[in-house]
View 1 (spheres, helix red, strand yellow):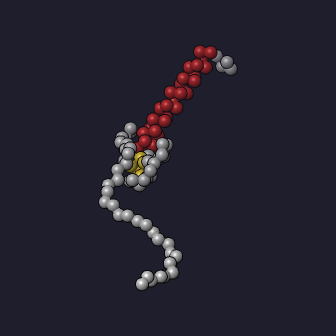
View 2 (tube, one colour):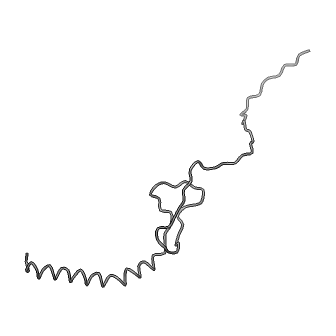
View 3 (cartoon, helix red, strand yellow):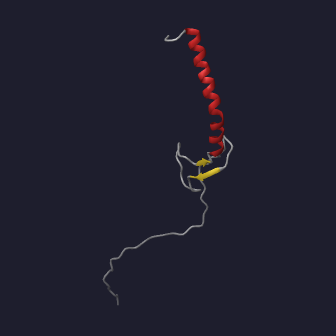
Amino acid sequence: MVSVVQPIAREVIEWDEYIGRLESPESVEVRARVSGYLDKVHFKEGKEVKKGDVLFTIDPRPYQAEYDRAKPSVDARRARLIWRRTMRTGPGV
C-alpha cells in the first residue's frame, strides 16, 4: 500500500551555523602629528572610514591661546615691513 498526500507550499529558509573568526584584510595605525587633548572622536571602532574623514577633534583652546598671544607681534612686524617698503620706494609707488 502506498500513501499519497498533497504537497504544502511554504517558504523554507536555509541556514548553516559555523564557528569562525573574522579579521580585516587591512588595518591602519593612527599617529598624532600634534600634541593636545582629544575633544571628540568622530567614528566608532570597527566602522569603515574613508580617506578625508574627520576622525578626531583636538581641544582648540591651547592653540587659540598661542595664536592670540602671537598675533599682535606678527601684526606689528607686518606693519613695520610695509612701512620699510614704503620708505624705500616712496609713497604712492
